[in-house]
Amino acid sequence: MYSIELNKISLDEFEQILTSVDLLPGRRILLNHLAEVIERLKQKGVFHLEALRKLLQNKRQYPELAETLSVSMDYLVVLNREINGYMSKPNPLSELDVFSDTELEKLQKAGIKSTKDFYEQCLSKTARQELSARLSLPAEQIILALELSDLLRMNGVGPVYARILREMGIKSVSDYECQDSAEILEKYQKVNEEKQYIKVKLGIKDVEYCKRFCRKLDRDIEW
Image 1: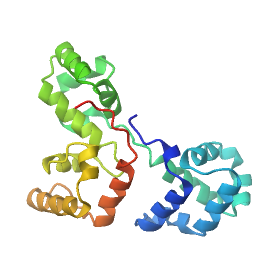
Image 2: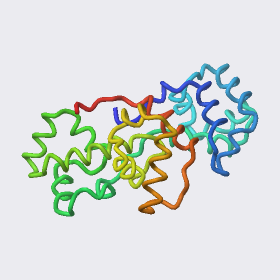
Image 3: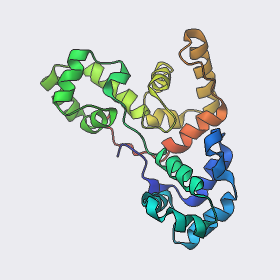
Image 4: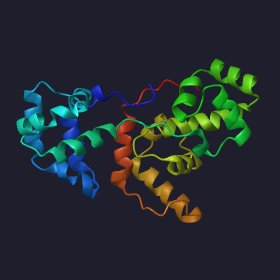
């Protein structure tokens, strides 16, 4: 599966995540009486993020839900955004900077438009070999795009960061999980200082945030 299964994230773990990361200013409202909100959700039979996501889908019920949880309507809107943000969003293949315009057109005609499409179509060695032969794409190019697509499944990783990770020798979700967080940060700082890929400075909390989510991603690829 391309994205995290939200039923693998309990409300208790969700609370730990929110209290251990540096939330953006617009998301800090979620910390208001968080423990009480979590307890009231459990009383409603909501114990993981998938159940909470489904609860928040119907915005017409927000007034009643806000009263039940003793929160504002704005709180529910931000909470919904936060949860949906945990799901891996597909990137356009063009953002990988791997394929030419002609190759992207071939892939699009084959129904492969995003990193999610590419990931799902290239899980097995046989599938990659068939795609390579059918679209005249070098095997090495397909592997590169698959590695980047896999890294992009991690919450908090964008196309540029994925390319930096690969340059550091981290080519998959499994590689990221297995490597020590301090080592990841040290290698990232070295590469980024040398080549100035990203202006934003990462900290150990950012590395751990990505790692917390990568642990819950499926490992479907046959390398």
